[in-house]
Length: 400
Image: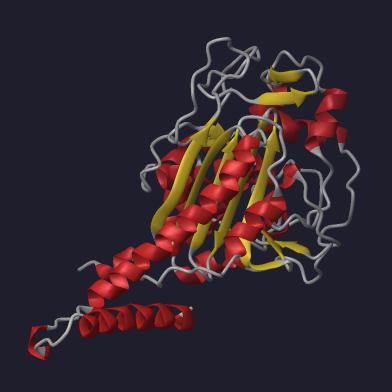
């Protein structure tokens, strides 16, 4: 990066000198070269180059049917953001998507649930290596720790398969407490022994959502709002809750509806009885609010670095298919600088990539089940042919 920056500076200086000599004799005392201005202009050039790269990549994805919103930031500044498509594809007169529209995060919700657990750890209210039954005593499985839930090493069975088999009326919401009660009664067989292997499973984060409630004494949605969303100014982020609902509504009361994609076209996704379970999914947010969360991680606004860093440490000694999992974040040996998560649930897909080494961030939120291409998105984020000059996180530039 320094080589590129120096080469650009040399080119600018050579251009200035060439212009000087080509204009005949001049008094050297009249020549003023503002190097700060040159570096600023070079930074603007690099921003424009990265923005053009982003526009090329994402316009191509939009042309190929991506219905959603995108935000890309680097070195603490938003470089590119764009909305494309419609809020409700089933309407004849369609409303265009906007940058500040909230989409379901699906499994990208897990990074926030993990953050809630880490906040409770910082409060001294829980221990990562304590047995989960310390907080949920009715759980009928031994030897499972909070850490194993965070890193998907509990070996527990899927709650959705259990509910599909045993929940009597799918017109009624299935909640976290109903999940725990059913596990206690039915005792479905675990997939593995605790800590045997990394196995990604939504039940881990659904149980963590319940741990947040049991430990804090608050509803999960209230804790998330008071401890994370409101302090960070994430004003359009919330947890969808069916708490108190006696029946599952036909559709979620949202502006941006999810859609299942079929050969005959998009079909608006109906609400589902499993949407009553929180912690593993069902949060809604915007790309700009997700960027606020990313800045908070950069600047340690929620947790000190010594605690926050644990979220980005591999939770397993083995790398299954070259992949690993920290606290709410995926990692891959294929993309060693990136921490990321995919989301997919009931008509929505999403992708969040955080490159801490180069201070890059990408959020893509969509309201269809169309795949978000991995090669194109990760390829763009990891491309180092053009890089912005490094900048310090903003609190370090503020006076106390």
